[in-house]
Length: 382
Image (tube, rainbow, N blue to C red; front, side, top):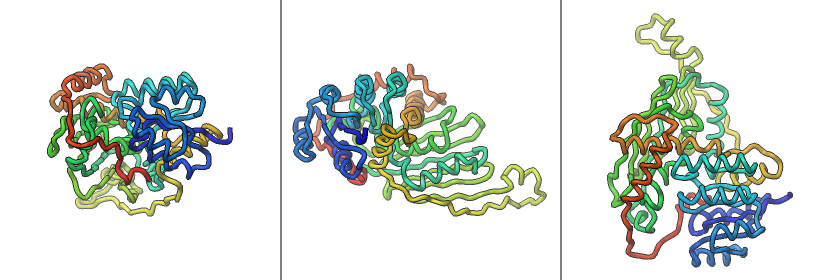
């Protein structure tokens, strides 16, 4: 195989952005698209000059593709990905893998059973300074972890939520900020700092006329006794994203476009045990982090998957490694539903599935005044 033929399932929003990226990637070719919306399908087939199919199954069985990108609403990611892998196709799932950990695990199990590639479109992992942060963690430069922090502020107007009947509904998205805006940095947070062992979560709808949350906060506890705090919101301007990891030998701060690292050579515990200085503190020197320039963004993930299929290049976002952010999200939502009680991680899939089924049953039909707008944030199509 000298090129990977890709199909895109769901081309009304993010999928069309992936289609526009395809000509930039010499290892792939777009050969088919699918969408249940006839208007979106015709727009895509006209724009990209490829065959179109009215549903995922027909594209999967067409013989025209080796791999698919699944860019449908959240709940459809697992069943479509599983169907594609069982048919012998490789899969890139848009984020999140699904709403329920149990369904995401079925995707992973199917990939293991069929031998097909399963990756997730967590393109932030490809960003050069994020790769540098991961390298520091893997090298053990922080030592034992003491504290973690994730604070991410987005902004979304009421017009955004009023643009489609499925937006910000339990039936359509399975949650609010934690399922739509948060997954990329939840993935980075758990990729760099690992999963906590239990969480205490709180969700609220502060500003918008929606049935799901627009703000989330959580306390985190780790197996070694480390603690953490998380906050996600769509009510903040200007927007920002920040991860902090503090350990025995250093402190790492990661933001959208920069990384900072302070090294504590002696170690904070060793200094405390040995120093006779009442007001002293260990030397903490900021170290310039080497950031290797590399391709990043959505195209980088597609290229990586293609090269993995053809040449065995290690995956940046393998499915089995991308479930942790969803584990954290599900645990936080379950904790909030239980009245802000501590919930163990990994989350009880039976308990979470019962919770999400109840919320879907309670979900109200949503009406909008104008036409449905199936578009994505322009900044996310790069």
